[in-house]
Image (cartoon, rainbow, N blue to C red; front, side, top):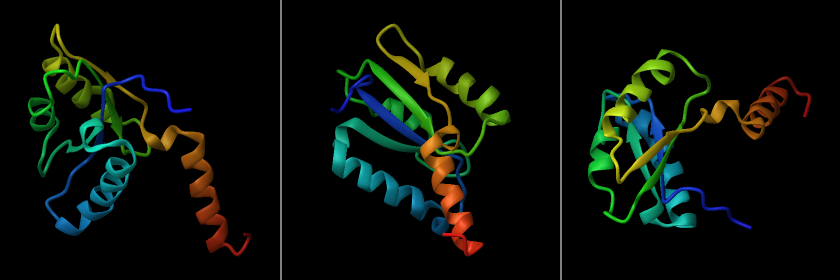
Length: 125
């Protein structure tokens, strides 16, 4: 059963001016939007490209009150300790609660997927 804890989830990638770098994130977002609806998810970039987190939040429907930011990062570094929380704090309002989730790299399913890929390269799978 699908749990709905948030009105909207923003997938947050680091960002790069290289359009080829963006393709995997755009493909992932497209698949997620197909499954869960365009109104329930967005893709934003922390820096170096658009849309930014600020751009995405600005375009949210007025009925959205609870947003999760899901970093498509492998681990917590300076950006997720300092930069993104500061962005989120600036975007919070009485009508909009924004929560920063742990990066996808901390999820056990992602860790297992990476282990599987590594095992495949080592001929162990």
